[in-house]
Image (cartoon, rainbow, N blue to C red; front, side, top):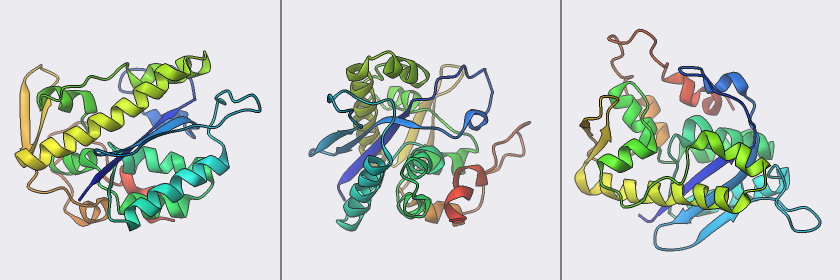
Length: 233
């Protein structure tokens, strides 16, 4: 199955403190998004003003077009993927398009390697830590927290390159997971660890699987936090 990875950047500027819940600053608005088909079409999604310059936010109309594009690609048999897409990207794309039901439908049928990892390990993992451990020959162009301010300051091409780069990295990671039948990451101690993933499965199937063992954690993230918005549409 051919892979299509999807990613968004938000335009909201705020200072996220260590261990602070990102959702505290929601709702979020999308500045730019990207889609990358493995070995095929790559697209940058943003809205323009009358002079052709990138606007601060993706318009409702353009957000809807992106949702419809993803929906069609799923119907065409592509494996639509996003890193933490269930818990973040699809949710806020639906919000931007004012079409949460369609966003939920696409999200539940998508593949989210991060959510699948969470349901095994009990905690989330970042794209960069997995890419490093799995020897992906591509690096993130910046930390995601810096993208909103750079976009607001007019560094549009840099943010476009960054969001597309994350889609490309996701494609490569998914191929690596499928080949190795496991996911590897660099831990907070700087060591490499891994968990078996015999096959990637759709988000809606992961939701139905038993929740991870989080008994050893002081402040575990509830599994429902990632998907409650989608199943309540």
